[in-house]
Length: 384
Picture 1 (cartoon, rainbow, N blue to C red):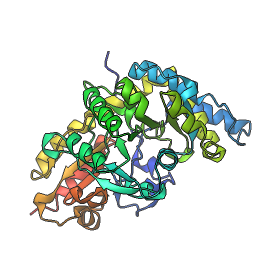
Picture 2 (picture 1 turned 90 degrees about the vertical axis):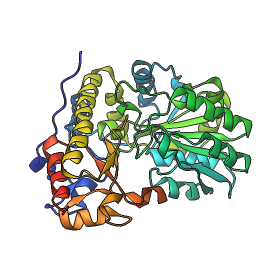
Picture 3 (picture 1 turned 180 degrees about the horizontal axis):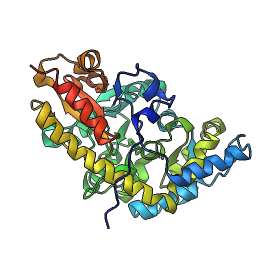
Picture 4 (picture 1 turned 90 degrees about the horizontal axis):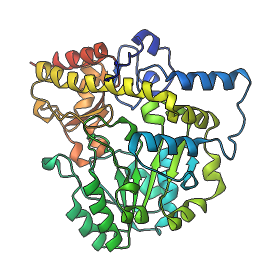
């Protein structure tokens, strides 16, 4: 049975929010840039946080908040993956987890492969961990798949790690089990590791299926680390909780040996909300969210065809972020600039994802159909 789509909050209500999405630009701008969504929280999350506020439960995060066990149950239900809660450790957010894992596994100056166009903080977190960015772009003409031969060459040339985005931001690519297993074999052959950012994993649209990197093969379990969170799917980024995942004894020891402060950075409300998000009672809400996003990703294709026909857009297999090629408009390397100035729509700037993003924008369709329609009509009105 297909879930009924979740309804976004009215924009007048949304403008009462004080988060980045709603306080970066003036009220006449439609904000479709940062990865926040416009839907009400899952009821189980609202109830848990409300109960905590009621009793003043706003102290330090406890040593065992239950998030590891909750995630293990979620992974079993949603991904058909059994992960031992003992292999789950929390921290403040996904970028923190990625930085600390890399810091513990590479040496200063080691090169780390990324696959642009990719989430812009990847370019900053690798130097923060002491590494040097090595770019191996996705194969755009092959559906934004990993360039396994290019990654093999980079690791053969001395790179020590691959920072993977799985599913991929901004393209919405869901890497297949076979691709992930092949990547693991390449890493193992060169005595390298793979660190997988899996923050968008709960948002894979049928018929695509998500494969956790650590579950792709026994070799992947041996060479891999992953970082996950409820923050993107359940709109909890401000509460600060992410999970560092392993599937082998030697990788678990690496994460367990991280400084205690890494885990202390976990937000108490983030852990409380994460437990509620990963609980079975939130599955129905997540299915309703996916139904809404599925409708919007298809609506966006129709709207672009009608109002901005020169745009090139492939419907993503995961998430609520659209990677749209507007280079045919002739608005320069960063068309988001003109769209903000003249259409009053805020989109994410394509070039921040790498040189491959010149002429592109990233658009967040985690909103109501009416807001999405308004945004694309405003952009279309700029065309001659």
